[in-house]
Image (cartoon, rainbow, N blue to C red):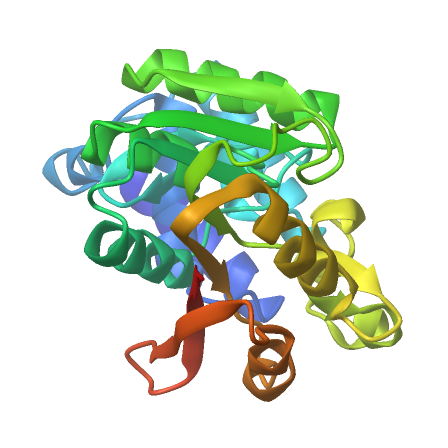
Length: 275
């Protein structure tokens, strides 16, 4: 089987199964099976696959057809121009979350100590550690997530302190100048309506906040007042349709509360400064 044939067959299988972007997915899976960059496939369409490459490619296609996200198959996802390791123990970093980084760099550039709450893969913490000179901390309730975030920090050369705890429970009062988070915000009642790739594969502890979807927002906004220094910033990613409720959580102890849209005009980030 040649590269060209493998791509054509794989793309057809994925298309018949209504998998999004079938050709691109086939290319990513084949290049992963061959341990080559995607551009190599175009330069060597007539190359014969080895038996091991065929076996790996077939297994990757089978996993994708079952709904396993491509990122969990390749264990790779790009975020803010860097490649992060990902596993089913953590959410797959989304491009939308890069807006949190952009707002953090704009509002919290002078922060000396930064905290990422619910770090998962470490995408936010590692990125901010590399993009700023701040002392960076990150928490997660999952031991597996903490281990993976630490591995990403080592791999990318970032200095970050990882803490296993529930939200900010182990973080000292008045210790952080900037807090960022992409918290769980999906209501439990919406579980069945999610894409199967999300519902069946991504960790529920990082997806579901409770019955309303606002439970984690409520806890973070309250405890951030304890953890932040005066004039410190809290920056949160917003779930779809959550702006009004979450904005209402920022009461009189906050100032300069603002929301920022993504490229589609959807409110994506909310930021508030402690009085």
